[in-house]
Amino acid sequence: MSATAAPSTREQSLEELRASLHALLGAHRRLRSRDTRHPGTIGFVHYRLLAELRQEGRLTPSSLAAAADLPPATVTGMLDALVEAGLVERQRDESDRRVLWAALTPSGRRAFDGQQARFVTAWSRELADLDGEAIRGATVVLERLTSFFERL
Image (tube, rainbow, N blue to C red):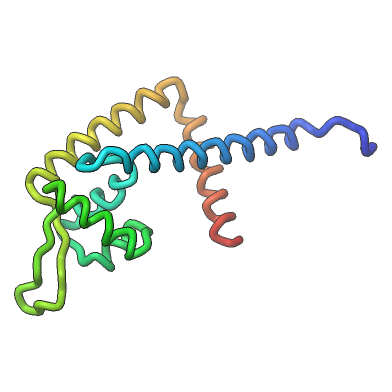
């Protein structure tokens, strides 16, 4: 292949994938930014944190940070906002007052369940035209890219 030859189809596809990944990461960053403009609501930025609380029932802030893969300082700020919104409550451990637990309030559970239902519906609608093979292929690529980023 000469230096002036056109890139191969595979090289073009890899470049398109790279550009699409950058676009995805940019869209995710903008979504997170938009979420911060609506205090008292469950935005995408809160979703993972609240999903962990919904699944586990209650967690310490440090355990919640680890489970949600977020920095502890970020989780503390998020918990402050969610407590103020009435979606999460902090509880002292009865046997060890040094331990603090975070848990969804009944209002928080209802709000999360509603947001989760809307998210699942929107996700399903957005990908409705893709068959199982295409979705599995995308999953393989995303898993491979996750491993790639972890190794960098």
